[in-house]
Image 1 (cartoon, rainbow, N blue to C red):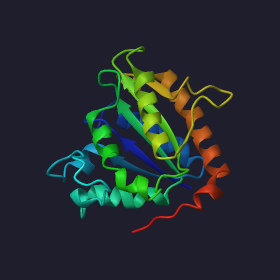
Image 2: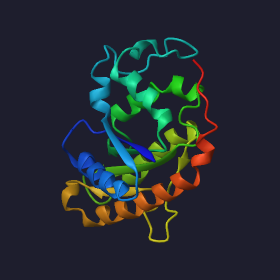
Image 3: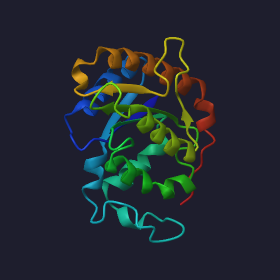
Length: 203
């Protein structure tokens, strides 16, 4: 089983990075190989690092030959995708939004169809917009046809996902929820792996 962990923070060594490191460890304990990517790094190669809707049917011309293309080529090969974002005005970071908007082509190719997804958010306080941020991540995933893992575990991940407070290195509650999330993501990924065998990509 393979997973992509996407760091949506502009701070490469901040709370989102820490939480994804914990998530990677927990998933590896469940026989899941993880690949971590930074949205900021992926977008840094682009002259215009956001979608301008240059064509009605996206052909990925704006990111051809860049790390973004490599990322979207990798996506159909994994079983799950976990997105971590800091809270910006009650929603995801600009980096997460920009990268996801560039995914119009992968959506038409059904590259994320039935991929298992989960969200992690970090706010300035315990109640700092984490749930609305996770909900935004879920909405993005739903539109791609992903299978979203929420509070489905008996142990309780959190209403929608893992909500942490900055700095997350001292947030023991968040780390406990990551353990539960990793178990749920792994369980759902194993249970649905046959569904992903039906994904096809054209082009």
